[in-house]
Image (cartoon, rainbow, N blue to C red; front, side, top):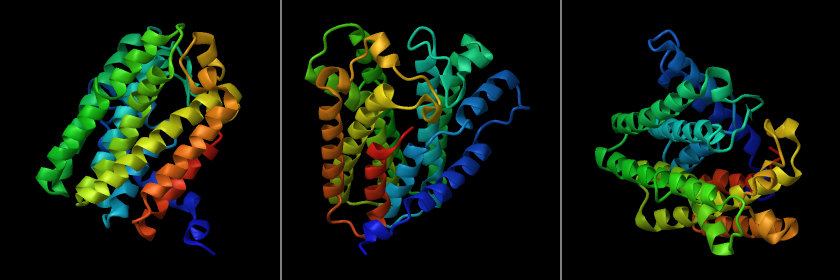
Length: 300
């Protein structure tokens, strides 16, 4: 039996997700601390479940080069806070106007728009505080490198830039280059930064970082294509949110531009590319290989 088939991804994910959830519980402000409403909203949106893909990738990136979860946990949680901030703001009436997230009312529905906006702002600020705190377990020069990496992946050259072009493209004809730009920036940039952050903190060399960067880009793009497909074909009960919304809004997606079958082939090809990028890594990179396959096989 190969190591790939012997590796128990579900057990791995259960353990790492539990570690992340326990750390998030500690790192987030207490609901009893003033301003209570803001802290309730932050905790409501962050602790409402979710796949925890990005923090798990931070941990797996560190483990692939010989590090441990305890070394990178503040940064793993920080990236989850950034992801949650993006979801809160995406769901707002001014952007996607979604009312359901992870099977519960979205933050603005539960707490009001003003609180939701400020909760997202606070989570974004808290994320960089957490990364800076990672200097307690990792060399400061590596932490500075991660701060820059995550900031770039979050801002106009990454997630926020991709979201802006996504909004600008709604209801308009979109070519393949623009679609690729949206997906690589809106989703893949932060996923790539997740893998790299863990590896940087654990002392990866330049050759390892180059391979992990390509892995992250491929997995990130495959994840967004799979998300596009689930919005067309998924079960809302498993998704925890509405489906069919991309088409209703005229969103630029892979299925809309290339069709379902071609999109699925593209996603699987990207997974193969991601796994191939790890060819020089040993068994410690098995979680990364397994996560790459999970990205396109998930149902929610």
